[in-house]
Length: 413
Image 1: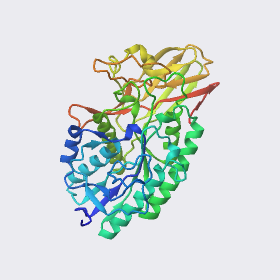
Image 2: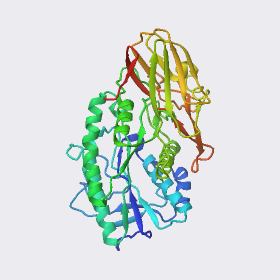
Image 3: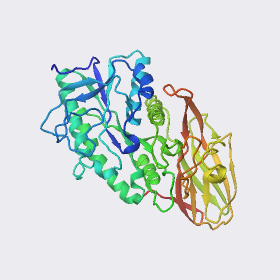
Image 4: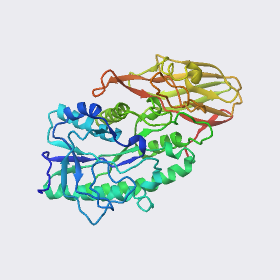
């Protein structure tokens, strides 16, 4: 067989740290509009096999090792594969934008080297689980093939959608494990392409039941994103869950990837994307400020949880404090929320970080929502191009932290 060659002149790779929520789901219906918008632009690295000799598609080897004695042989078209994931959708959405701009010679290589139930340390190259080694071998083989075909190669981003499997892990442990996985991957990309990739993160909330687990992941990921200059693409907690656990339908996976591509588009145009926060306390008054985009204000979606337990699961717009909150007043013409504490000496504050059991709070189709909840968002939205009737939202960052007098210290390691 002749080695399959791409018809484009430049390919973009996307390494990804992913667990089950980022794994591809079979859905020809969800994939169809992505395929239609990216004709002849999407590929996967062909010819790789796992340790048992099984041929690999873009979904990779999961927790089996790729046989590194067998080289890849080409780039096969990814058209009509029938599967979607957040990382795939990110790349399809980017390729569609290139096409809109008249660039049909720029394409992408989709891949997934994760598996269900993975923790970030399993992407470290020396971990017993081969996810990290598999990904680095795929990078090297993809770069080798591109060079042999005279095809340009770029790797501007690393995609991270992992965390809820670490719900019992401390923030310090998560961040140590993340950095140990991320540093060698970045070094590999730099060696192969001469550029440093930017991290794009899907920030985690909890699954539908947060009681009894640590759930330090959201705070740790927020801090890591700040330290790495990453794009906080979106937060998983705002998307419906299909199994009373944590997993997402194909259309939600497309919406997540499309929102992250929107973030990259804004960033590449020189605009700000990330929503950050600051907390100021004076006695019983706390002012929480969110750094929104120019012209953006706070927006409330009051009916968001009506089918998933109702307003009782999200009082005070998702803010909680030791001793209770007497009032929570958002400035819907601005970017602040003013809280009045029942106890001026409250020792802790949380936002969209509730400890609650929402297992039985499902809609008529059986869908649930994360136990971490807020109805507040940034006001800038965009209609989805790929999921009819759906909107891309900008959720505010969840957090928790402690007070020492009026000084606030956020968690995150």
